[in-house]
Structures are given as structure tokens and as C-alpha cells.
Length: 126
Image (cartoon, rainbow, N blue to C red):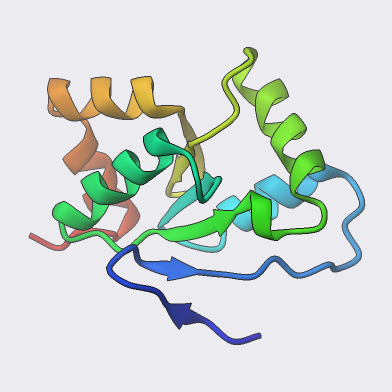
């Protein structure tokens, strides 16, 4: 698998179509492979904003663009089940743990909890 950097968003990773058939298992596996993982849709303004937030902080998230994946709709539905609501993207995992959608990420940032989470996950060193 090749990783390629696109603009300043971090790393976009094409999803592998491996042996995992359950979308929730696939989400859990992908979320645990990098310090910061963002499930996104390329045309979503909130996804753009969360990617800009992380890049502005010096974090290079691994970004999975669901609209570029043949199984993206299945994964999007699995993310909606995880969140328990109709908002499906962006969904952020830090250190393999579900942080949530944009509202949870921003609340963590404003309350001062986001930077410690990023440091603990190894995404920030300073």
C-alpha cells in the first residue's frame, strides 16, 4: 500500500479491502492504525474545518475519504451507529479512541483537553 501526502491535510490512505466484512470492525482496525484518524467526505465543509484544525496544530492526521472508497457508504453507516445520531462525518479517533464528530472535537479543543489527548497519542511532541 502506498501512502501519499496531499496538500497539507496529513496522509490520505486508500482503504484496503481486506478480509474484514463487518464495517464496525473495519472502523476499529483503521482507527487503531494511526495516532489521529479522520473519517471524512471530500466535499464536506466540516470535514475540511477539522482537518485544518489539526494541521494548524501541527498534527498530520490519517484521513479516510469515504466518498473515494467503494465501501464508504457502509462505513459511513457504521460511524453513524457509533455516534448514535445522523451526523456521520467528520468522525475523529485519537489514539484509537472515538472522540466524535466536529462538535466534540471543538468542545475538547476549547476546554483544553484536545492537546493532552494528542500528546498522549503521540501526535504532538511539544
